Image (tube, rainbow, N blue to C red; front, side, top):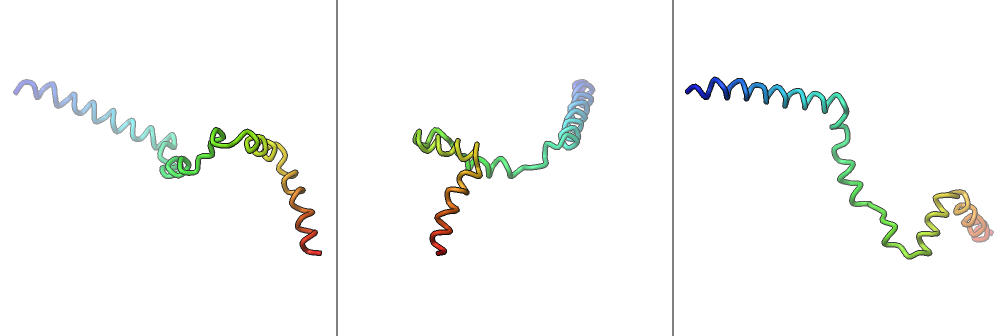
Length: 81
């Protein structure tokens, strides 16, 4: 019976810590995007799966996004004529 004098205050302290941790997490935006990381892992683009030529093309496209559009533009104009 005397152990209850120790366990009840201890459980209240632990409850208070848990409530504080919850409100801290809400305040610091820890619960904003719960689904984003789960979806992001499905569409992970791993450069290790690509051949060296494809990696180089992807890096060039990232560095010069307008160059890829310019290459496609003459083909589109030729098809229209």
